[in-house]
Structures are given as structure tokens and as C-alpha cells.
Length: 319
Ligand SMILES: [Zn+2]
Image 1 (cartoon, rainbow, N blue to C red):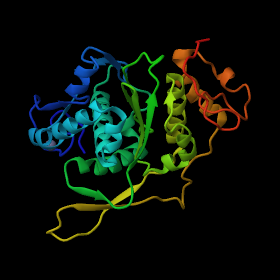
Image 2: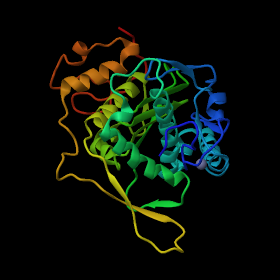
Image 3: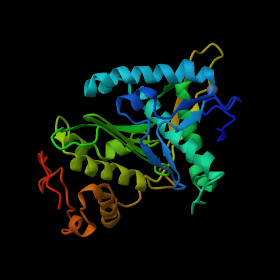
């Protein structure tokens, strides 16, 4: 795992400065007109989607990254069915590549920032451990690898109602909590990396309520708030081990272990902290924390009513 412009992000081999691959693939940039769209990085510098590239050797690019992107592009053509037909491992690799790509970019910039960040991600030992574990499972993009009985992430698929949906493309990630969301047309994928599917199980009931429904963008924002908040209070880092094998084995088998003895898997869910996260996500609708917490025991929800039934919502007038 090396964060420099002189090494491939995936295999670490030494490369020349022109060997790079886009973090957001060209098909995504073309399809959603992202080339000149701006992105704000952690050090407050501004980049565009087309400028966001990571060091990548020709071999990794040609043999692994490009074929993966082609497969995802084809799936995306079919919308939700296309994405659901993909293996979760492929989606993990795809999201993982974009997440890791933004991370690498941020860390290269952290070495030479415009404004020194208050807490440098690269200097935090817990984050270093997390990124190292993540780097290991990301290698499945390059090395034939089977995850024994787990997926190193949680994936949520949500269908968005087009009536008031103004954003054909949307993307958000949180480097420290490893929460990620991407919206392509009417399909939103929300993902928490490196949780071994625990967050999906924890939010399973809530996720089921949205199944088969078309969500209003404000409902998607709430769903994201729940997932991102769950990632925020998720408190353990899985360890991954390569199962000892024979030299003739064609693939590696990865086992995992989560230490839930010395640490709680989740820190307590605190309503005000959640409300704060929800307020952040609801910014486009100008909904404030005091509105969210009018009933502190049951914070504002656009997805469920008091009986936890789905609330259909097609139009929503801004405050
Ligand atoms: Zn490489």
C-alpha cells in the first residue's frame, strides 16, 4: 500500500507519471456529463471529475480495471436489474476502487496540502489499520480471491422516483467511516465498506420497508443518513487472513475475524448525533435539527410512519 504518484495504486509497482486511470471511469463521465463538474477535496482545493485520476500500471489497468468498468457499464444500461444481477463482489470492487481512488488522491494531497487539515487521515493509527485491511480485500480486483463466508461490505439498492428527482448523478463518500453512496439515474447504491455486512443486518428491517418502493430524493437522503450514521458508530475493524493453501491452488481464500469481545461492535446510537447527520443530508430541503427532533423519541422520518409502515411520497414542498 503506497500513496505516491510513482506507484500503482493496486499492485504497488513503480510506474511513470503518465500511467494513470480515472477514479470515475470515462463511461460514467460521458454518460452523466461529469468531465467539468467540480469536486471539493478535504484540503479545500477544487478538482474536477476528469482531473481525478490515480496512478495505475498498464497491466492492472488493462487486465483488471478496464474489464471491471466495462462490466459495470453494461449492467448500468439495464438499471436496477443490471446492478442486482452483478455479483456483490464485483460491486464491492467497483465501489472500492472509487473509494480507494479518492482516498489515494486525498492522501497524496495531504503530503502537500493547500491548507493543512486539522486531523491528517494518514497520521491516525486506527485509520491506517483500517486502510490496510481494506487494501487487502481490494486486492480481489487483481488476484483471484474468494471471501469465505462474508462480504467485506454492506450494499443497499434503492430505486428513486423520477417525479422530483433533479440529479441524474450523485456521489458522496466519507473517508474515515468508509461510507459511500452513488446514484446513477434512478438507481442509488449506498455502501459501507469493511463492515462484513454487519450494518446491512443491523438495518435489515428498515431496508426491507423500502423494498419494491420508489423513493423520493428526500427519502433517499434519510436512508443515507441512517446508513452513514451507522457507519459512524460502527466500532470494529475486521481482520482478514489468507487461508494457508497449496502452491497449485488457483485462488486465495480469505477468512475474517471480528473482535467483538474487547470492543462493542456499535457505539450507542445517540439521537442528537443522528439528527445532526440527518440535518446534513437534508440540507437541500432546509430542514433543521429542531424540526427533526420535535419528538425526541421518534425523530422526523420521511420513510416510515409511527407504526413503522412505509410512507409513500411523490412530491414534497420545500419549507
Ligand atoms: Zn498495478
